[in-house]
Length: 236
Image 1 (cartoon, rainbow, N blue to C red):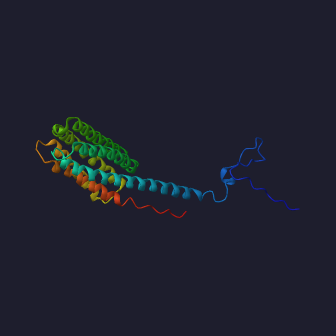
Image 2 (image 1 turned 30 degrees about the vertical axis):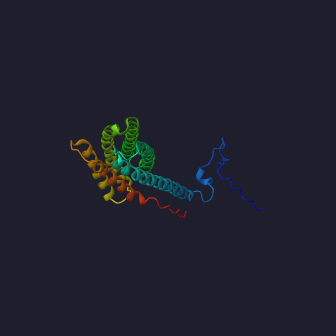
Image 3 (image 1 turned 180 degrees about the horizontal axis):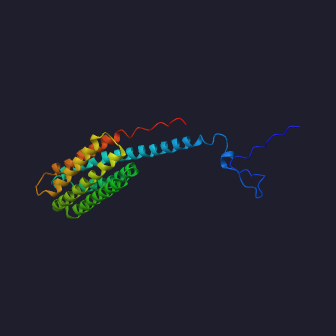
């Protein structure tokens, strides 16, 4: 008569019959077939999930940045003109503030894993920029055309804050390897220029004051464009 050894069920510990307490044998002896090969597959799936989230964040930031740029430059150019409705300018800046909050959250999601302190500083700076723009817009709505000068003061402070955010974001992009190596340097240059425009006692036109912001956001758009392609899942 031949006997057939029974195989322990997958995921259970086999008991040693020779041991008084029925001590379990090692997990290695009872592991299901193919168990060790599941770890690379799980790691691959986790990496693909992170890549998908990064792609969504890059797309969100890209769309929000383009919308913010599209509204900011015309609104600053038309600010204070007699033939421009104040409500239209205020509405544009309020929408810009909301879009900047979306951008801040998306960039944070994209960069905080590899460069948490710099990503956190960039997040706070862009949120501060959004709040300053929104407060300036409300002041402009309250005072009308007379509030244009006060709004420009808010904009000067906002330019300094977003400039600091560009510098922090340059560090985060460098560590996260987003875009080419030129992108973080260009971001840092735009940030320093924005802070210089805000700090130096030189009167500049509204278009010149927004130029560092435009350059920095365009660099961001170019750097994020390469992250908007949907990644392909790797074979397990």
